[in-house]
Image (cartoon, rainbow, N blue to C red; front, side, top):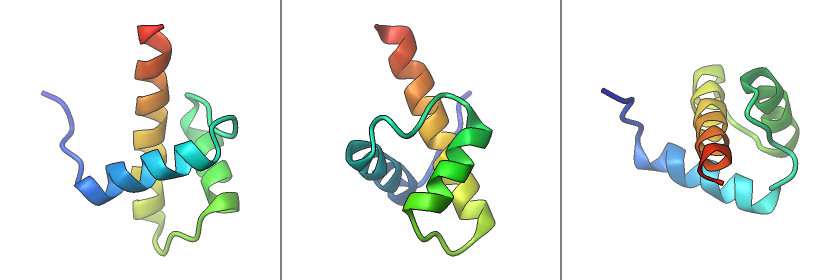
Length: 65
């Protein structure tokens, strides 16, 4: 079974990816640091969830091509 994430995490991650498509990779640690630079996220756990979704999203897109 996969992870179920709230819609606001998915929506935020996709919106950030559309604004900064070349800034993120499929490396979680890199995405956490990049997210700190471009977005103001209140909590560390929320930042990690958004960065994790971005990582997974980029990884899945890379495998579909």
